[in-house]
Amino acid sequence: MPDNLKDFIKPGSEEELLVKQLDFSRLPRHVAVIMDGNGRWAKKRKLPRVAGHRAGTKSVREVVETCAHLGIEYLTLYAFSKENWKRPKKEVATLWRLLKEFLKREDKVLVKNKFRLKVIGQIEAIPAFARREVERVKELTKNNTRLTIVLALNYGGRDEIVDAVKNIVNDKDFDIDTLNEEKFSQYLYTNCVPDPDLLIRTSGELRVSNFLLWQIAYAEIWITQDFWPDFRKKHLFQALIDYQKRERRFGDIYPQGDQN
Ligand code: IPE
Ligand code: IPE
Ligand code: MG
Image (cartoon, rainbow, N blue to C red):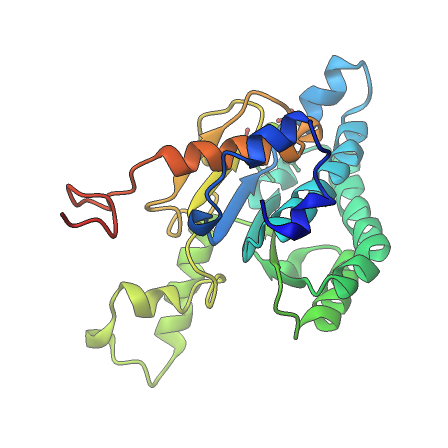
């Protein structure tokens, strides 16, 4: 176990047993998470849905901290989909307020730990008070190089592809005959971010809900029945152990990097 994890993991705990099963030379570079189940978590406790969203912010802190300790480079969190505007106005307003409060509270932690905040999605359409906060923390952390936290806000995977096409068409210098997958990727919101290796979804739904449609072409998918507010370090360790047992063949008959 690397030294920096020793203070983070309680000796003799379930987490320690899990961490010991990890191969630190084969961790994913990029983990993406569909943080689902806040409403059901609250309902189970006879609480309003927003109590679930509030409780979910604790899991955000935990997954960020754990990724950083492991040395994972990119963590993408699906926080608000383009389709989430369909929800009751009050719930939507609370989600944006929680985001603002989260960033206000956590900005020092991001700076201190050299985390960088990046945003994907149509941010111009989110409430101004939340957008200002997002822009402020982005600016504050833009030169950091440790963990990049990519927040998906007002994000839709199909929208992202349509926006990329529009930008290519509007780029007068672009020679369409040279268009290929690599060039197309540069016009996505995730330009400069490698594709996710591991996609986690909480609360058991077996769907991708319009998340990173292009980028997850070869991501390994891990789903837990547990709700997002119950997500803790051990879940991430379990996902990583499972990920390391998979054979990533990318269409070949051999796992990547093993040709014999
Ligand atoms: C995820 O939890 C949070 C957002 C989508 C913003 P949900 O609010 O979708 O919770 P469930 O799926 O209704 O339980
Ligand atoms: C996906 O969860 C979006 C986020 C986690 C932000 P949803 O709860 O909105 O997805 P569906 O409606 O179950 O597909
Ligand atoms: Mg949901």
